[in-house]
Image: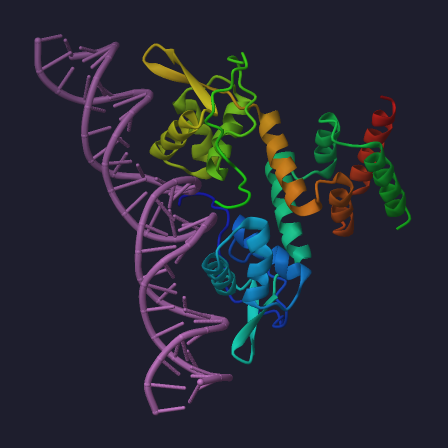
Length: 148
Length: 148
DNA sequence: CACGTACGTCTACATCTGTAAACTGTTGCG
DNA sequence: CGCAACAGTTTACAGATGTAGACGTACGTG
């Protein structure tokens, strides 16, 4: 590694007093499959592996083991936490969907649109992926923003 | 594979007569590093490995071999093609940046915003990632769209 | 109290990614 | 004409990912 390197791990201890629900900005990347698990969790906050499995079983056809592995990896990545509920675990997300979405969106924006939102929207416009309702919605949004 | 499975490979021979510049919609996924190579290519269409390397060397600090490997993989993935230029190769992209951007954007949109653009923009708005210029730009865009 | 059962963990394994060294064939130069 | 330089191809290898079976352990039950 000579010059620059993305996805670096900042091992330095941040002296800031933020111990609670880590809003982590650079935690290990969540893979796509893992994200699917997070999706379930985000919908049904504390959930048992069984419940999560049920969801993914029907939507993705995954085996129980698969789900458990993913849960394990997510725990290791600090994206979710477990609280004991008798004999089983209750999984709860530490990484909020909002933060995740932000990270992913920001990443795409930076990688493909020079970090600017307008070009992104422009792109969708060119692709004719914007319906009239989309346009109306967007205009409403912009108006709202002006009121701030 | 029981139920659904994204990213499937359509090995079936398509009887359609589209041999030129494949606008391929489901070619093997391009990795992030590979995308960096594509970036260079998209800027400087036909380029030698040496030229590409030069770019990536300064921006990413990669070794020549690394770049060559990436080029090789991209060729294998049919994302780029080579045309012989004397002793060396000239690499040219088959996958256009536009198509790539579309695929990536669409993917994000579907994965995180239910396929709707408005929520995406809304998200950026909430994150206060929209500058006044962004907003103005967007409004201009919307106006343009109305004129169609 | 022995056991099956339920649930989490460990192990497995093929493929993909990031990175790069080793190898090979070709060609220009001395 | 032989060899160094060059450019593409192979091989390498660790870590991530997708997927899942094997294993270990605690617990309720007969």
